[in-house]
Amino acid sequence: MELVFLGTSCMVPTKERNVQGIFLSYKNEGILIDCGEGTQRQMNIAGINRNKVTKILISHWHGDHVAGLIGLIQTMGNTDNPSTLEVYGPKGTKEKMNHILNTCDFDLRIDLQIFELDPKSVEVFIDKKDYQIECAYLDHTTPCLGYSFVEKDRRKINLSKIKSLGIPEGPVLGKIQEGKSIVLNGKKISPNDVSRVEKGKKITFILDSVLCENCYSLSENADILISEACYLPDLQEKADFYKHMTTKQAALIASKSGVKKLILTHFSQRYKTVEKLEKDAKDYFEDSICAYDFMKIKL
Image 1 (cartoon, one colour):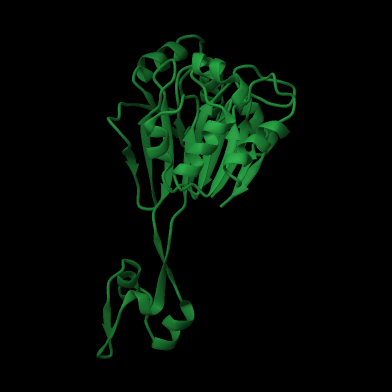
Image 2 (cartoon, rainbow, N blue to C red; image 1 turned 30 degrees about the horizontal axis):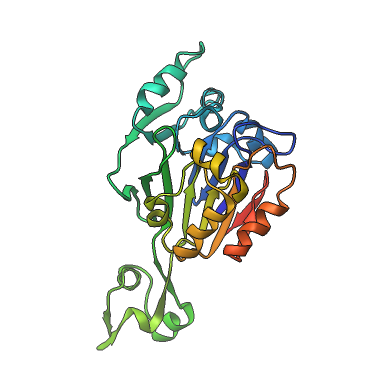
């Protein structure tokens, strides 16, 4: 699993920072969280094949989070074997995607599937064998969703023990991987005798919101919380007006929700460097860092 930050600026791109975009690579999935202007160029620089994108999770429909969609969709269709792309977003996403697709003349060559999400609380909307994705409404100036990617727990087999006990590969070993006991040569072998449970990772994305209850619920026990932090606390009034968070508020979410690591992003262009932003967050949650464009995190 790898995270790549493609844009870490707020509404206005700067020379150092593009607008919002994060790419999560997991096995055969390429999940793009928001797609601001210039995202596909950022992917080029980061060495990410744009046709690897299988899903796009849209937090909300402000331009700095979606203005790169039309270019990416067109480019993804420019291949001999166009792929399937699933796009998820809040209420109104189907209508807005239709508007976007009608702004240019081009053939829609990919299989584009669009889904609207309207959760009542924290709800699972994708449930696969190895992972699930949750969403919940945040509190911004337009309908806005936060997301959590949750890897499922899995059993890790101790190969030396399997070999020493003579457990064959195939259905018998498959039962152990499912957490079931087996009987071999008259002896009962439990899954814990030859394997251990490896807890899956959880990554939460909170992009554009004031502090609200779902910020805490969605972030609970996350290995990594990626949170917007547009301002320092001295601009709390401005943050409230535009419905954004400060570094202190993001850090308090991490502290109160049992988060292991906090990564701040979505910084106002007024901050030429992020040292003060990171220092302020660390005052409330020690394991805090500020993201930068093309930063990669492997889990």
